[in-house]
Image (cartoon, rainbow over all chains, first blue to last red; front, side, top):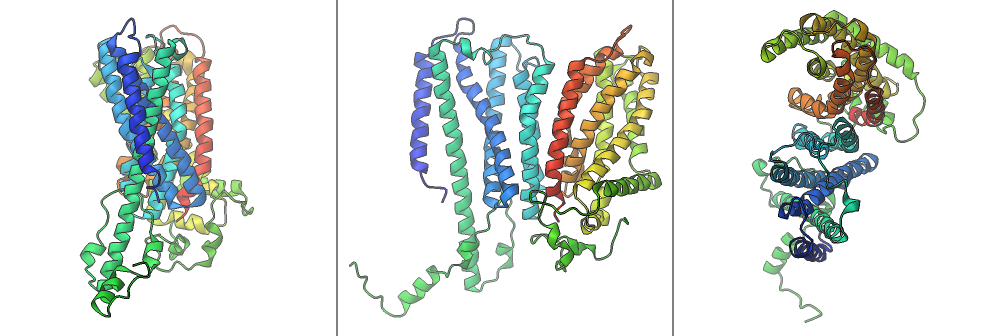
Length: 276
Length: 268
């Protein structure tokens, strides 16, 4: 279901990332003041942009979930926020390295983008603890969606507030995108595209894995029920993850084929297939 | 509206709700669809808000669970700041920061307690049984929290002026009141939403502050920047309009967000 087109997407991601890195290292001109250090701009800024967009997209998916009550939207929202958190960690680390390199401190409070990113990150860091702390799956997904919408709306507001609060002490590369030489702009756009593709691909992988695991669990539960082995320990074991789960009722409703196949093989001789 | 109604658990009509031994109460049938569709007018919202607010304030007056604790916490925090900073008086940025941090942490104590009685004693169930708009509860709780904050500031601000503040408060008082009121509105909206979100979780005492603090950062920025010039020696003039506007916009947006989302938290 989610695995469709995954291979093409992966290949496209690898290709664009390779092109982007090649452009960054071999083609884009060295910046006059910062020199080689400025190359981290092509990694840090796309990571930050994609991560923030992922948070907002998670909020939009959460709105869809609240409107439709379809648990697949909840899972998409969860995956988008989860992946954005991982990208957020990478953003903070690369931002720190950049700050250390260019200003001499690991952290720079007068850089509003970095500060507001930290606040957003701290808020979203409570998303999974919130999910973990709610037992009932239906309520868990509903409350998580309310949180995702609130936090998604908070992202732009927080940026405005923090930006207002700080004076511009440092020249800012991001604000000056329009003044960049065109080689730098092009490299930046390709990098952004590459990181966005990476985000999409990873999200798709996570969705596929979760969906497959849930199907597997449903099948295993079905097999257990058919074996008559009511081993309560395995079937009643709760998942340790706070990830949402889509109940694969379609899977359990279907008549089991695996069990029928084995009994058929042991009993009457198999009828020759029309093709062979 | 009494706090506990026996057998009120039948109102929790959601299919996945854990504690529904007899989830067949017909009264809950029209309660399941939240505010997105067209909602029939029932009992007037303002009457419901008034009744709920009266109940909340009455409960607080009788139990004295929140406001005295919040006020005591604020005063104690000023004492702690005196020793932590080793200063007898503060002014300007530092004074504004101390005041806002203290008020915020005291407010979080109130936020944490806001829905506890409803969750534990069946107040949610009783409210869902009543044929009123669900936003009434948001409004009533936000107004309750606003009242708590106003009483808290009635105690904390004079205590702050007495214990720590260097310049006299007299001429700055009207401006400060405006800033505090705008900040309180935002804290009330965000606090009510987060309190409702956190109260049904296992780690509510931990999650409440964790969720509230980042959401309140813009209010701290606006409040502290707006009140910092009021605490400077020899300053005459109001708080900067830019920050009042920021605070007001933030209050408005989060008021709308809380209004749009609160219904979803009251479904079971």
